Image (tube, rainbow, N blue to C red; front, side, top):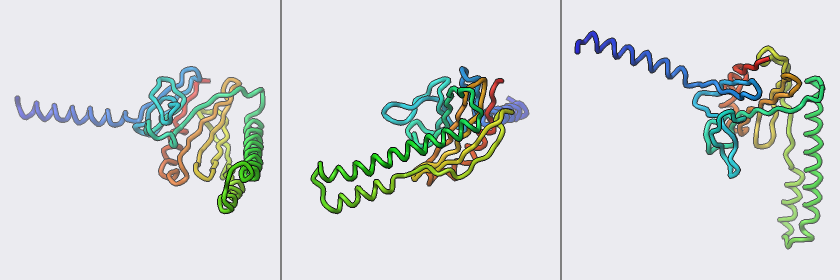
Amino acid sequence: MSKLFLRCVILLLSFSLAVLSGCGRSRFAIKELDFSIQPPKGWKQGEPELAGGFKMVKNGRYFFESSDNDEVFISVYDFPSGGKPLTQYVDESLQQLEKIESLWFSMGKGLAKIAPKVFSMTEEEEVRLLQEAEDFPKTRVLSRRERKISSLDAVELVLETESFKSIETYFIRKGEIIQVICQAPVRDFAGYETGFRTALDSIQVKL
């Protein structure tokens, strides 16, 4: 085998590896929504496991970095718009979220008052329970902006709770609201944000 032939083989292999490494960031589709996205390199597509984590499923609505970590993901949902304009739907969704959280807050305070009478609790435990009820985490809207997703008008929210931070994007396709959520723990979100935003920019939808 000549040196020239070997050099050609090595160059060809190097080129092939370069092409394959460039394809590491795959595009995944959700056929029923005519939707596709290119999540961060190495991520997979699937659905949540009942016991926690994810399993790989073709056309799944979740995209994840690790099957063992269900705190970091991109998810896609669809809902009937009911003929409502996009901004009205988003406004009403935020109002509904606020009502639900207020209800849970009230229930927590009520439970904190009843629990000491039902269970044997020390004064310290009673004080801690009441404090936890007062500190019930609420969702904060950090930002809101209009943007485009695959040429469609969209609304992007950045939300934060005590534990998690997310980018939630809404747009309407054929009378349905499509919601894309990119979530990570607050402590890790900065490390994922660029990948999340690149994935959102990659979304393609057949009109």
